Length: 204
Image 1 (cartoon, one colour):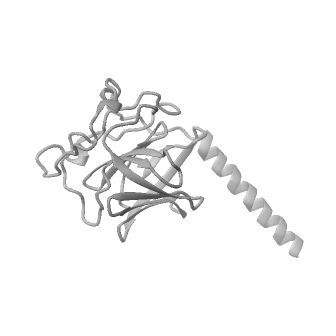
Image 2 (cartoon, rainbow, N blue to C red):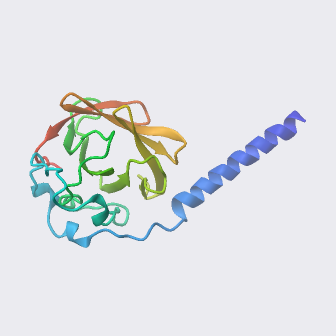
Image 3 (cartoon, rainbow, N blue to C red):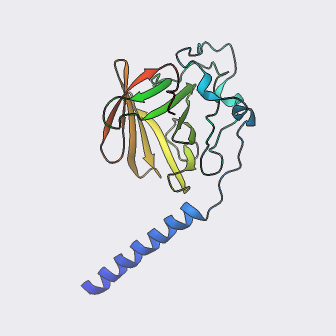
């Protein structure tokens, strides 16, 4: 009886692993709706301390097509995706906009965060994660991982903390503000303090 239960659990485990592998490497990616113009100029030339006023005078989050990572990652830094969006941040959404550089933990970590409405775009390590912070997988980050694998993450704000839940099963990444710093915590528990900078460093 015990052996049968153990074998059943092992079988379920391998089925789960097989399903995850199929999803990660065999399921087609979503239709790419990225505006190709974001790759016509160099995103490293932008002054990221000049943030747009979110006063509702321009485009809304819905007016701008969702962006995806090209292929398995970009080599040319794209221009900001939400540059023309001025929709005020949704209720409960913390302003984390800017270009952030790691000064402790993962020193040198670099990521760009754009926001308007309840939409966020995080650009880092050759990837573009464009999502809504509504806590759903449907509107979450449906993109690629380090091995060019599919992944899906539901994102929401919890008491000022942006929480990324991988497949909406467990917390994988968090971001939160601490004064003028943004604290990035990865699934391995490493906490990285970042400071806002105006331009990409020359070595990136």
